[in-house]
Image 1: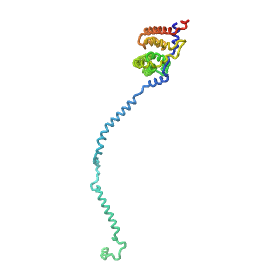
Image 2: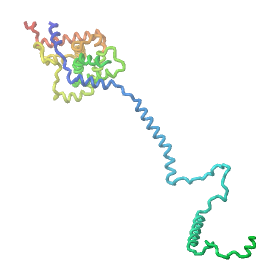
Image 3: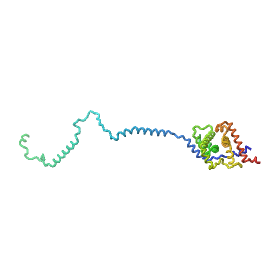
Image 4: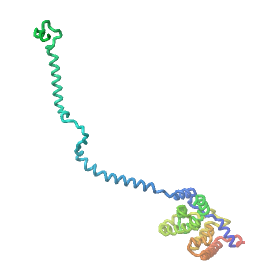
Length: 136
Length: 163
């Protein structure tokens, strides 16, 4: 009776064991995604260019900093044709200080002196006859 | 390959694939899961996904069996036998008896029997999976089935043979 044996064998269902359908579908879904590596390449290129720029700029800072700033070179301004003369050049500031001191001293002396050089009221007979003659 | 198609393949063939992989390895689920993941990773779906899955499971199971043979021998004494079938018995035919009868058949014949009987593969598909001609696959199947039938008759006679 071969058909009977086949029939009975066919009714045996193989076990799926530890196969989890949902977990397998999830794993398959994850595996089906082909990640784009474009952003990784772009990020790597940016990092490389930044490092290269830093490497090129670093020697300038590293050499100049210990010795301080380079001396400033004064470059004459281009001539405009209306340059001030030498007489108008500002003298030494000490000169102006001394001048101011002298002026102040002078004011102090004048204020303390009682001498009046011009009378407020003209004196009688102060005009000499010579002067009268001259007026005539 | 669409998720629906993949789900159909899992529903229809995962269990048979596990039974097929069990012919070589003690952890057949891992091989079957790897095969499905490999299938979804294919840029172009194979023409015959079922035969492709059986072939991948077969190759993976054989490789795993080779690398794990030493460990398996060491663990076989304490390993708990896993059930091959859902039903413990059908009409007086014990599942353990079927498993024992299957294990008496040579591996090259047994894999064809499992692929044909429980996997539902055609002989052309089996030929593709195993790497032989369809006629050779048919001959091996016939021989293996006769041997299984003989084993089962001896261990569990049918009702008609008893009557």
